[in-house]
Image (tube, rainbow, N blue to C red; front, top):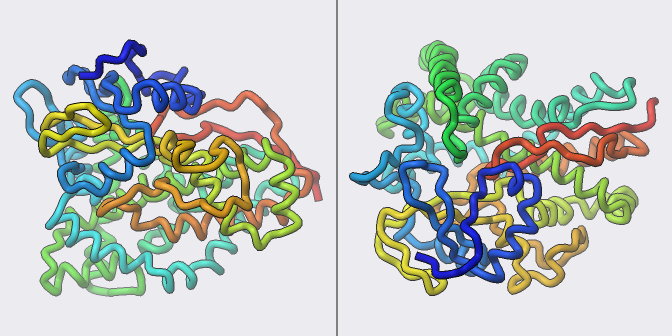
Length: 413
């Protein structure tokens, strides 16, 4: 294990979550491959990797993967085996699969996220963004997270699936229950898993009738396409279809939530960048890339070591858990010039914010488009946008890292 004298990192406490970048800098400089505290109390620890080069190397190395490794000394499934419905659901998510299952599922789902499909969705995304701001425009203030950033992507995903976008409050409730239990954290109370177990069954009860209906009455939506693929011999079960729909409605929208919220926060805390973007809206695509780099929507992803491997001078053993600190990698001065500076004109914005290797986020093009549209509409319709609270309350989650709420004000029409 690490012989560094720096204290063992626990990235699951609020002190770290509220200010991860200060901690990233210390560990990146003093112990860039660090043996810290695991979210799994049965494990003696976990590795955390902070440098861009090492993070990219691991994401692209087939000797690291997402499917859990059975160990005699600890339960390593994504959730405890006692919660069977929830565990079955999560175990079928694309993000926890490796080839050939990962290849099979991703090839089917990725067809819904091609450049052509995303471009065709843009008018609908604009319409949803406008409708959400219509609801709050006259008030002069809102919680940008709850009333805008959360609702937009979940309504878009529901529409793509063929579900009713008006059911987004239900999806949000169930998705939060699953996310709270599946994201890494220290010793969640039983109620967290019980809520997730119930939400998993609610998702099944919701999507099963839709699958049955699409089998008899196919439409131009993702569920119909998945049903068609299953019926044509692609070995896709109804349980996998439900799990895929559920995954897209949970992890699939949370990235965009945090991109919109933290992107807005970065602009409001950097008024020169905000003014520049207002006067030069053509910078928006590059600004989105800088937002993804500067304050990464997903701060950490995990891998299991499938073999004994040396990384950064440390011996990682088969079966070890490895946390890849994307937020740290995207501010690595060995990779970026002035990485702590938010610069929407930065020329080199390529980052690992959407992962890498075979697990690169399949919805990244949609997330980028949603971010561009959401911020364009926000800046165009809400003049004098400003923060109402400087003390940001952060959600208790280092993976899907974002503000719990973001209260903003603006000039009334």
